[in-house]
Length: 478
Ligand code: FAD
Image 1 (cartoon, rainbow, N blue to C red):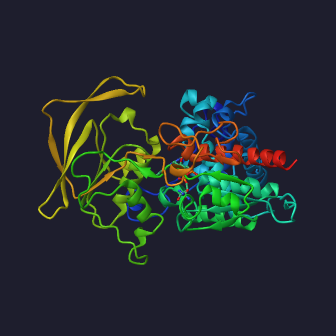
Image 2 (cartoon, protein in one colour):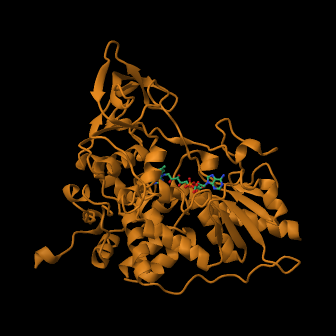
Image 3 (cartoon, rainbow, N blue to C red):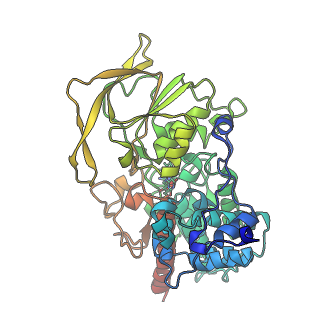
C-alpha cells in the first residue's frame, strides 16, 4: 500500500522527457526529444506548487500565465491550457522547443532552489502539439478594417522571422491586412534557415505560416526591402505603416589568415544550405554540402552547437570539434544543447584559440593553427578574459572549418534610409515600449533592434509593435 502514496509535490522528481539515443539520432535528422505523453504531462504539471505569487511568470519575456495553463493541464483541460498560452504567445510549439527556459521562467520557478524546476517548456510544447493533433475553433477575428476609399488597411512587414510573423498575426486579428515581404524563398527567418530540423521540425513553422495565411496575411517571397522596394516605395504603394523585422543575419568572422580558403564555411551559409535549402536531403534536393572528414567549429553559442551537431549527422564526417577560447563555464549555448553535443561525440577543445587556417597545395583547408589560452581577470562582459599562453602554438588537422561566432545587423535595408536612427552597432534605434523608430509610421523589433537575441524576445517585440501600430493608425486616422 505504502508505495502508492505520492511524495509531497515539492519532493517529486521532474518527469524526464524521452528522447532518441545519441547513437541512433546521429544517423537520422529527426527531432531529438520526443515530447510528453498526456499522462506524463499531467504528472509533470501536477508537481507545480501553484504558488500564490508565481515568480515563473515574471521570468517569461511575454508573461504567459504559466500557473494558469499548468493548472489546466492538471485538470486535463488541454484546450483551455493552449488558449491561456496563446493569449500571450503566438508560437508556443516553437517556444516550447527552443526557448532558453533555464534562464527565464524555469530559473524563477521556486523549485529551482532544489534544482528541480517544473519543465515549463516541455509542458508548453505538449499542449501546442496536442492542439495541432486536435484542431479546434480558430481565433475570432475583428471585422476587416477599411480605409476611406473602402480598401483594406494594409501594413507592410519586412522580414518573416518570429518578430514579423508575430506582428502579422496580431494585426490580422485586429482586422488589418498584413503584407509580409521576405528576402528568402521561404518564410520563418532563423526558425527555418538557422535552427536545425532535429531541434525544430520545419512542419511546425510551416503550420504557423499557413495559419497566418488563413487569417488574411499576404506573403511576398524573394523580395528584399531596401533593394526591391525602399521604405519610401512602400509608403507610395499605400501602406499605412511599416514594421521592420529583418533580423541580424550578417555573420561575424575570425579575421585571421586563411579564412577565405576552400573548406571554410560561415555558419550562416552552412546552416542555410542544410536547413532552408534541404542540403541534408541531397541528392533528393539539389543542394550539395561539401564537407570533409574532420570538421572544426569555432565558437560555443547555439549557432556553434547547431553547426557541430549537423556536421555529426552528415555522411563521411568522422570527427567534429568545437574550438573555444574560454572554458566550459563561459560557453553561451544552452546547457542542454552542450550536453547533447557531448553525448553525440562532439569533441570540445576549450581554452584554445585559432590564429590561422592552413592550406594544402590545392588551396583546401588542411589544419587550424591554434594557441592555448588561460583565463585572466573579468572583462567588460563580466566573463574572465582569455589570455594567450606564450609559445603554445599547435596545429589541429581538419578539412572543414566553420566560424560560428554570432551575427550582426544586416545593412541592406538600413544603410540608405535618411532619418532612420541606428545604434553604433548598426541596429535600428527604437522606443523600447512601442517599437517606434525615428521615422513616423515605421516600427521595428527583434534582432535588428537588439542584435542576436532569442525567439521569444523577438516575438515580445512584435507584440508590442502591433499594439503600437494600431494606436498610431487610430491617431492618424482621427
Ligand atoms: P530573423 O529570425 O532573423 O528573421 C528575419 C527575416 O528577415 C529573415 O527571414 C530574413 O531573410 C528576412 N530579411 C532580412 N533582410 C531582409 C530585407 N531587406 N527584406 C526582406 N526580408 C529580409 N533563439 C532561441 O530563443 N533559442 C534557440 O535555440 C536559438 N537558436 C538559434 C540558432 C541559430 C543557428 C541562430 C542563428 C539563432 C538562434 N536563436 C535562438 C536566435 C533566434 O532565432 C533569433 O533571435 C530570432 O529568430 C530573431 O527573430 P527576428 O524575427 O528578429 O529575425
